[in-house]
Length: 95
Image (tube, rainbow, N blue to C red; front, side):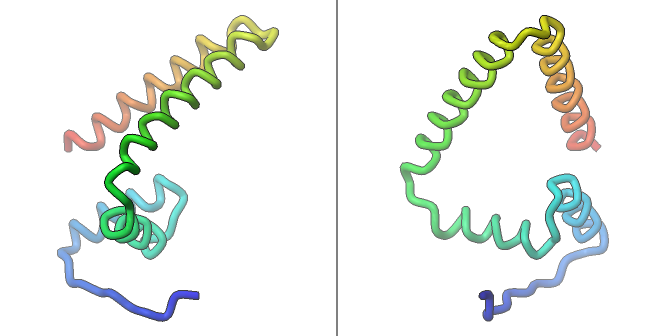
């Protein structure tokens, strides 16, 4: 249960951008802000290294699963979707 409140004033543009970011992640603005606060204040120094190790593991695991399944077109489709998503994110952040 959350009982403490942290608030701050931001411009309309910052609010709109933050709201869009939260929605793109399927979160409320409060949930996204809570994640950011926790990440920035409570994570230990070794967490970034552990996160990187997990990303590499998950990448290898997913690639192995995609390569082992019977549909030969699925892996290229997933890679294309990933590349499209990266390009969309890059365009969004360039504005």
